[in-house]
Length: 491
Length: 112
Image (cartoon, rainbow over all chains, first blue to last red; front, side, top):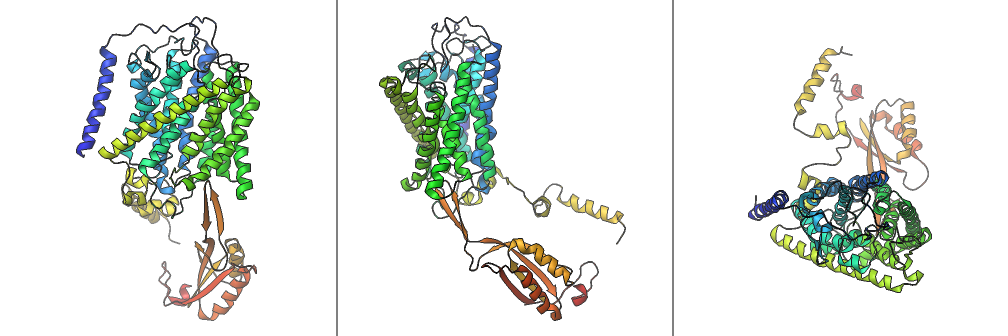
């Protein structure tokens, strides 16, 4: 092991050790006393809630948590996996899958407390809840008065999982796996956790400002989109980009992934109502409507401009619509969702096509879909939000409040700056310590073989895969055939 | 003996097989290949990119026959594989030195 890698592993272990020690040894803090009537992120504020657990709300939030997990694995995994070349299929799937494991651990150790813990200066949460200390069955009324605090934590965990997974699309097919792991942990801690605190944390400065983000347009989509942009600028293009064709190797997987994303997004958006109530139903409706409008929008735009409606386009369009409606789902009407989705389809299609003109290799269009789609959605929220839909929200431009749009702009700008700058810095540091890219030979061989020593498709099983290899059991097959032959009468 | 190697359009395989077995050809080897001649390829669209695929899927049939049957077999083959459109394919005839049946050891024409 190289010295730099040993140092990093030791640092990581030390950090984990300190958190665990802190969790075990420090005094437990007094229970957070939230201001009564404070609006939980996205939900309608209940009048002076006595923190009592509602079984329907809890069941729905738990189910939503599982739905959002599904969005990462296998939703996003398949969506991205199908779009890369065959030699990189497993490596790409692994990105999403292992982020699920990495962030599940990071979240319960220090991620949740940094994002949602007791506020420090509007910027970050404290470490009082490290190791989930103080996070139990009792509801936290500042966030969700009718479900156990742990349920809220779980739900938020799945958002923290999918956000870094989105970025992986930008540097697909060329990132070193070891550096990737460190990057994910660093990004989650230095970008996602603070940003989640700003927008959703009790006391976070964007939350106090009144910027609206129902389910994560800024926190999840704009942040991943702009971070992806920083990543492609630092990491550089795939070798052969622009000269060699790099078409998707398995679009059925991509469509499967997009469908799972659509399905899971009901947990993402409707679950953000944090209750089994009318608001959740409303968010469900706007989510589906926007996705549908966007799929059609993209498809029709592509059909008229390039002559054919592609399956990849329809799938991408649906995702773009889902991205755009994310910050708006619980604040806008279904008719507004039609417009938001439809325009998202057109805008994101255009953005993806501009990629070649701007000259960067955002392999799976994270910037075009999540960055642009999320920005449009956040701004659209400032235009279309209506208190008639959600009293806990606000009115947007169309309902007489141009100020709301300005708040959205501030939130978008803050996200863009944090995401871009911090990602840039993290990647530059990692490049110096560990190197970001795989070697040219490894890039030719593909991630699957070079990073994982595996092949995704040993297809033609008996005709090629098994016989071409030597290894455990290879000789045994020939022996078994001989024995079977000896028993058969000669013909 | 001669090996008759034919590159044909994939959907014509059944017609060719029926025709050949109909005149007494007992065995053949078939492989999936790609190629082009005068037939143009096609374009595929993925997100921002347009990809031109020049190589078209074809089927290659190989049959080894005694010299006396070369003309008859290639005639029947060509007739069955023909559609009249560009891309129908080509037939090549190669000389074969020896043929051996693996199971019995028979050689040359008795191996066919």
